[in-house]
Length: 196
Image (cartoon, rainbow, N blue to C red):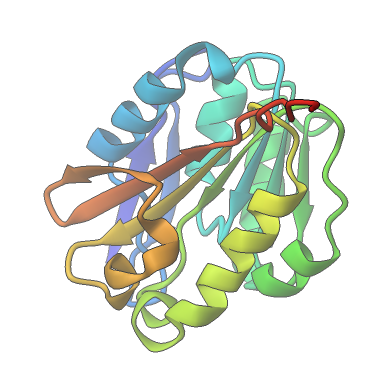
């Protein structure tokens, strides 16, 4: 099914991205994107935003539209990655956006996080949520270990997915929007150790 997703706010407000929706591609609904960026608020401008399992790239483009310093788009599908590069050029963000045509799990395993806080958004395919939640949990744990203090990691899941039962997510904040679930985690500074 062919459709168009609209960027909600910022310098690209109202611009549309054409895409074909199918089982492996489910653009993050506008309501969920609005909620996500409302939650992040002032943590978006001047920060790197990483859109993992980027698909159409609309979430990363929304971040750039709202003032993110740069955006990385991680997507293994070559056609989707090419379309993202075209959107970045068309919208004037070719220098701020970088598309990585690779497997998301491999990219996370190799990524060296910067010293500054970042925002990482993961919207994995249904198959990953249902068939290999443990792989996803491991990827989230690596991100949690490596990002700088104040970084935010967000997972978009769906209601009833096996990952909801994972004990590793008990410390994460959960927000539900229809069938969509956002899991949010912010890295806090380690508590100072007392000297005896």
